Image (cartoon, rainbow, N blue to C red):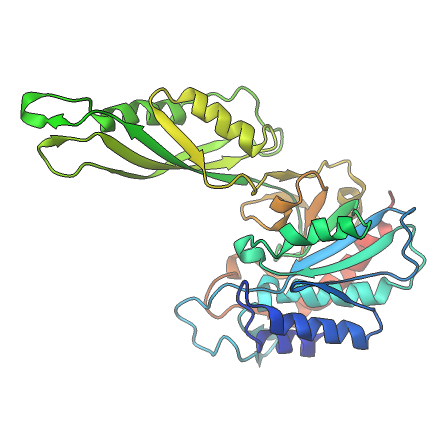
Length: 350
């Protein structure tokens, strides 16, 4: 497991350029007799005796990384073992989850579980790319396979994240009429935008998520005007909307558009959906029986692309180490993760 992790660290796998680590994972699983398959740079395999008549639990994590941050005191692509720690880019996010989920899958794939296991180590998670989870789930459906729930491996300190907020970024445009500032002419696009900004800031959506609370609306950018003596006829601004399961992303965008009196609001994307799994779900109950606590995650993952598919985010490492210089994972965290993953899976009852 540690050798595999070091091999992944030493092989650059920036998002959309993960072919080499996909080769490593495919070869590793093939040598282990797991009969892996590959779709783009997504590597996956099924437990022995897979049957469509049984429920399917997917074990998922990602093998792509962000670019190295500034400030590394070590070579980010040289795995460095110091005491109980392994340093290297992607060690924590999410190499640790990758190798521990693989180890767990290999240990359990021949066991007589009352459900199927599907291991999926996917690509392009850090950028929500078109050839990662967005392509993989439709590919599975084409194969006649539809998971019933998912364990998503991300650094959570092996606590169970039961929810994530979604995200919609709105590009907003407000039009007025140009005029001479000294003559008080025209219709000031800034003033019109200010009205709509205030309406969005104070908008009451009506429904509120029981788990995620209210939808968050924040104006983050604004641009208008060409010179001091011209009343601007155009104001462009950007709104960051953190969505919940109370409304779909498209419904959220539509409600905000109706609230704006003078502006056009265009969502860049509605893909990053909020994700909530009920506490009563068997996967959450299995995690609780394994002594895990539940929480709402402040970060996003591929859970956001699995809309309608119950997903629990849990993995070794700490979220605060991700995307930072001198990222590391502790060997003890890897060992603990395998023990807990096995306990959750062996306790799970649909």
